[in-house]
Image (cartoon, rainbow, N blue to C red):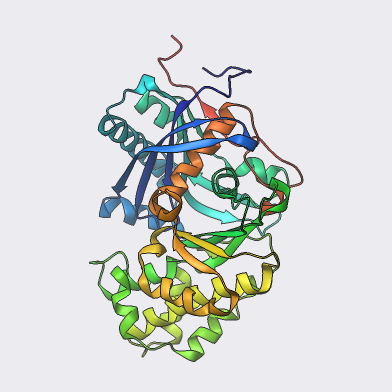
Length: 392
């Protein structure tokens, strides 16, 4: 299957697997894909969401701390590879398909470190692709971010390739905003070429909100469902000002961030600094922080005319965030919509992106956008694990 020349006019089925910075579960998308970057089409055939068991999630979060051991990391690399493979098998069966119907898998993996600002910059996603290939009997492509970093980029964001191929418009400028654990946006000027778009992380999306929800519910809730706590709270002005003073927000794009800057340790520091702030006020302040940093990123860094903003990720389901964006961007004349409006479920977008990136690697096409990541040149992304029995 891994040929040097492929017919780009042939529609193939590709699986995309995503485990985001929120570490709440696995999204699997099966997509029909064909074409080159300039005329690529992709259609979601099936989307499956599989939540991590509480024990697995706790083991993942243990890797985020400074006390994590190499033994833990080594074991979880294989545990997650098995979990990703099992999720793929479930999705294929529920879609009424067989492994032999699938051309390849593109797996993002679970990020445990993302350190683009160090010298050298580095990143680490786990969930071994050889284990996925063995579990599914399908060739698996993964470890996408390192090739961009090797080309001088930050390894993120990589979703802009999907945004360009599927969501650019010939009549209006658009912003594609994903509010996952980290929030990031892609700016698509009207009728743009790949070199004209740009993208960057705006800061935390749901990450601090989720940490607060877990803390104040003693683990009973993974998120502030429908923003219920945040709705009842009042923004703590001093805390918000302190959060906004983080040096990340004064950096120009391209830029990326992650749990190392805005994860559990950041939340624990907030608890130490503001021990008397109530749960609802904490959630209200963290929601305002996410909204403010997204709005500031648009106001300060988007110069081209844009009239539409489409939101994906778990934050799309939080009415406090969505209404906050409507209010914050009211003077910009930007209409705000769910990604549903463009025919893609908000929770499926990132898994679809890695299906597309897997397809691009499989067909020997670059998957990064240098203006988005800061890379010196386009790069074919990822490494390939061959299914053990397909070629015997």
